[in-house]
Length: 333
Ligand code: 5GP
Ligand code: MN
Image (tube, rainbow, N blue to C red; front, side, top):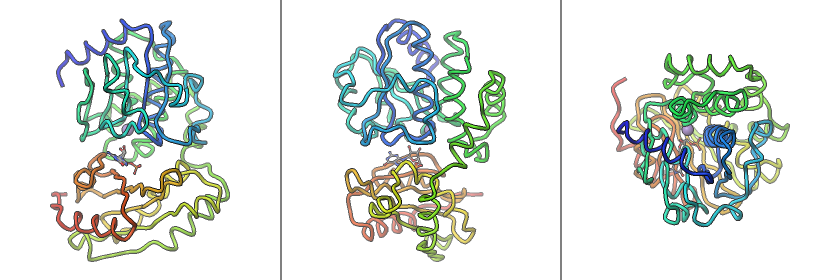
């Protein structure tokens, strides 16, 4: 990426009084956090800001209900049809915008802010830092370039994105600059302990029950992934219904399943109650590029955390995935 992309982004944001923000479907902490952070900063500059995502239900995931800036959100049905400036967050490709995907062609300018290695650069201006730990960190880089202050209101959603995408500062993406950024965020006085507790340590009793159920049905296939091992489980729409859970409530299941040391790759297949499609989450421990594997199956993500969406039945989807994992080269670790 050229430095002029950053300059062009700053110019676009300065010159527009109305800005429409969109993040990927079924937003996680980084998608929502990065979008709210820039949204608050733009509103502080006196701009009209709306923010949304293109999947149902349009409900704030429980973990993020306390974040500032939620009043910027509008349902996709109220999102401008042809915004002068559309800004996308944490979105590697147009299809990840779901119901808002058509706004990319309809907008006059599209600014893409992201950190996915698989980003297709679908914007008129693309600010993509593939080395960044989170899209929220890219937003802070932009705000610094614009000489905008990092207020506590902005720092809280940024911290949410950073803590989500680094797995609480555990993943390899946790560089010294991540900790330096975290220090800046904490200096604003944000309730970081409460933010983390909501993300990692708070769930309904129904979730605890569901966790037991889906872990009990997990399967270990030691011969898969060229002998490195595969562990997987599935969450049906009936499971979610039984325990009154939304898809966004079960994001953390993969973090439990992937603990199994016998398997290099962990997979959770979730049936989306809205569209009946399988949302497949994959994780590896460093010997396999699951990002490339998921990209070959129509999805994307990062090297060691990626996903794809499948309209095939579960057993067929697993067969395709097993085949792709068996063929993928093993990385030097
Ligand atoms: P998760 O498994 O937590 O849903 O997602 C892990 C990573 O894979 C995230 O960076 C996410 O954006 C990406 N990802 C998950 N599902 C899909 C998908 O269906 N398509 C694409 N392109 N990326 C996905
Ligand atoms: Mn992200």
